[in-house]
Image 1 (cartoon, rainbow, N blue to C red):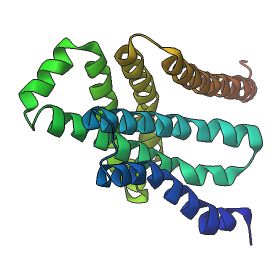
Image 2: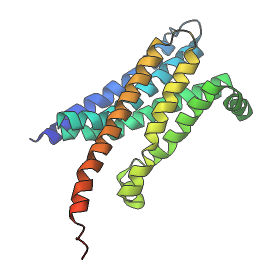
Image 3: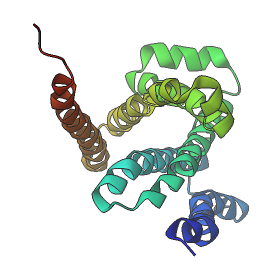
Image 4: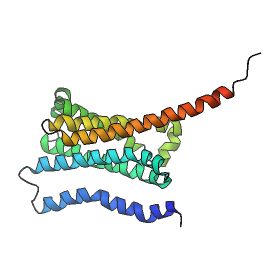
Length: 213
């Protein structure tokens, strides 16, 4: 059995169950009435931080694959991204339903006037096309190049999500700085990889140019 088959058959189901565990924790504690003195805040914070964690995990897949040479890691990029959207949706719906009682006017007022809401809303909106086009069928419809360009929105999503967290916390910014540093490092690795690829391609391109008579 190949490493890819092992990952598909055994590791991916474990990752799927583990990714649902934070939601299960919420359901369990809600059932027992153990979400603290402010349940809405608990749900909002819990779903928000797990959304950010899955965004960072999604961004980490490609650099880890480059560094380890373990290509089956790419099998986790899509499910981790979809779980980021899942928790992001729970985060937004908690805010929309429980904080604003389904009144979009109040949400829009927050988006306009409160920078941390602006950043968070931007991150969530950018995840929507990423989730909708995550299937193989959409890759075929858009074409590989266009699909890859569209899914670079995840970089902006990561930046906006960390900014949302940083501005929301206000006082102790230790953890937001950790996440922001992680996202910055992962994006820097991508920039380094792209630059190295461009340097490798440039000499080959010049070698194919015929000398002028």
